[in-house]
Image (cartoon, rainbow, N blue to C red; front, side):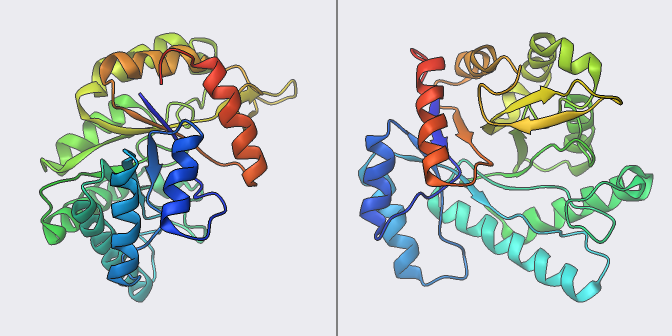
Amino acid sequence: MRLGTSSPLSHSSAEEWAKKHKELGCRAVNFPVNSDEPQDRIDEYKNAANKHGLTIAEVGIWRNALASNEAERKINLDYCVEQLRLADYLGARCAVNVAGAFGKRWDGHYKANFTDEAWKKTAAMIREIIDRANVKNTYFTIEPMPWMIPTGPNEYLKLLEMVDRDRFAVHLDGINMINSAERYFACEEFIDECIEKLGKYIRSCHIKDVHLKEEYTFQLAECAPGEGEFPLRYYAGKLNELDKDMPIILEHLDTDEEYLEYLGFLKEELEGLY
C-alpha cells in the first residue's frame, strides 16, 4: 500500500510539497492543483511527484453534478470532465467525486437521493463525464457515502452495471459505508465483503475512523484514526493484499499539525504494510 494524506500541507513550491510528503513516509498524494490553473503550474507538481516517486492517487472534484439548477449543473459537469482529463494527463489512479444530492446541500441527505430517478440520473451523469473526457490513463470513481448512492458494495456493483463504461471504477471509503449496527459490529466481515465484490475495481481508498456514541438513538461519528473502533490494520492489510501499490489516503483533519500527528499514528499502526 501507499500511504498518503488528502492535505497538501503547508508549502511554498511544488518541490517542497513533494519532498515534504516523501520525508514523512508518504508514497501517494492527492494532486493539489486544479484543471483551471496554468499548465506550467500543473506540470511543476506533476514533475515533482514523479521525481520523488509519489503516486498521484486522486484528482478531487467535490461538486454536485446533479444540482437542480441547470446553470450550476452544467458548470459542475464541465468541471468534472476537465478534472477527469487532468487525471488522465497526470496518469493519476483516479478522479473522484461523490454522486451528488437532490437537495440544497451538495452532499446532503435526502430521501430523493435513493429514488429510481436518482439512480438513472446518476448513471447518466457518470456516462456523460466519461464519454466527454474520453480518457485512456485513468478512471472516474464515486466515493461511497452513508446517505447517497452507493452506500455499500451491492449498490456499487449495481452502479457499475448501469454505467457500463470501462473507465468507471471504485473509490473505496470503508468508513463512510459503516452506517448501521450490523456493519459497525461486524466490520471485518464487511471489509471482506467489499474486497470480495469490488476488489478488482478499486483504484484508491480513504482512511479515518468511526465511533459509536453511547447515546440514543444509534449515532455514529467520524473521527481521527485511533479515536474510534474501526479495524484500521485489518482494512489496510486486506487492501495491501489486493494491491501492493494501493493508495490509502488519510483525510478530514483540520490542520497540518493534526495530519502529522495522525499520519504518525497510522505509520505505527500499519507498520510493515506501507
